[in-house]
Length: 445
Image 1: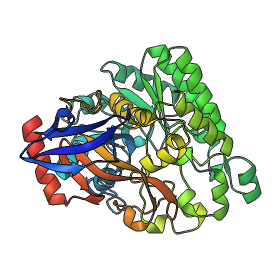
Image 2 (image 1 turned 90 degrees about the vertical axis):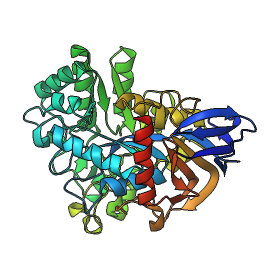
Image 3 (image 1 turned 45 degrees about the vertical axis):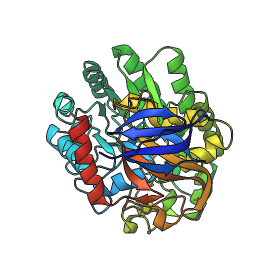
């Protein structure tokens, strides 16, 4: 493998160093590093972050390749500074068997842009009736450790208890989509003033909060790990805070869009703003930011959910729920959390890299950028800005709520296991990346 020197990069603690990458790992860090065989990358003015890790990505393959593929989604991820993603199970066939999760893992390996870790379904077919092959998926070549029916709630309390008990035997985690189905039948947006004025069926905050409250108690009862997907309400933050104060093993995520957008945007009837869980009130946005800042919410996860154009460019009631987010996540976090003083760049490394990797058991991220660690690195220009256009979206999905919005920050280079996937803001071609990925697997195993 080739070597390179990242010259005068700014680490997330503010220090400036040269970073020498050789054979896929960080070989040296210091000043004035040289290597006759190394390519020199000018990183002056760029923040070096450990490669971002997304615990919640919809890659759609197999079955919905018109929306996204593992390759196209991996390219979108790399463009956003990610080097690892967790692919949700709501595919066709559902990722509820060892065979399907191994297929997804293999497609990710072949693409090479990011590490793709499949998320296994909790229940067969996501139907909520019987447990899926959790043990077989955990023991498969894909080594699944996160299980979720995301898109659907495991609403049966007994089934949820059994799932938590099962994963606790091997240190896995159930990632719950907290949505009481009986309280959200026909719901179109957040229940509140705006839904009342628009005459749209409301999605009450309690539908999320009640499931979280139930599940933290179940997790405590059986001694298991619970992860709460896409927390969206102030009440949910309080429930998670209560649970953590009592030593319950719960982690939680917030999406970038829930850190910025509110239900007022639904007045436009633009289906780009239709998402599950729905955009909430300004008070909820403030609570989510505060929860992320004080550690109640552990991580940021994108819930990247691409859809075909025809599924979004239609009337509100018929439109699919979901937004793409891989390419914009870091910019939105910078806008809402860093530029506002709520988080430092070191905190960003924690909530977008180290802790999601820890929850998902992805090796190589615990020490961040350090000598001997795998060279998973994103170089970011924090003073750049861009007005998001279609050309900035590198996956198949164009259903971004931020199109036409000016966003801060720009991912300039991304390195995965030492080889570049993004150079000067442009994706490296697929054949070159796939070849580099094969070489990296040969070297690092």
